[in-house]
Length: 122
Image (cartoon, rainbow, N blue to C red; front, side, top):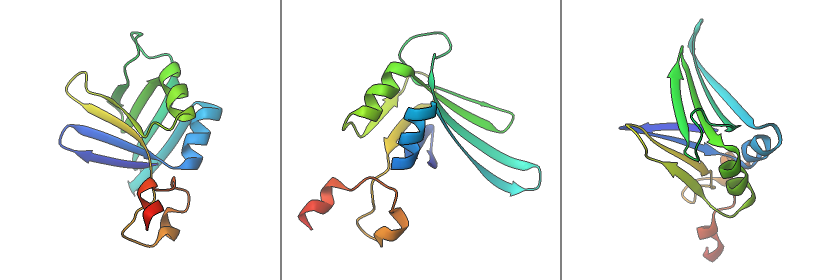
């Protein structure tokens, strides 16, 4: 799973195995260790969203970013050809996307990424 920030936008890109894990277990977690005892953890999970509704929720607490997808939204996204889902309710925009193979570099580094539909004509 890749994590990216730009301004007030948080983007998570999930590989094929990440999407499978989300579908099977309802959760994918990664971490970045900056130094001993200085770790950033980021998690995406599906389930009941705090406060109900069908919006993606994001929180940050104690060095942990948590993105929660409503179960029905996650199920539809996982099972469809839909590339991504977005939530812009609030100060933070959250994008959750299927990670596609890059077209401008060696595909071996993106072996678990989804096949890029733009690569078909190449």
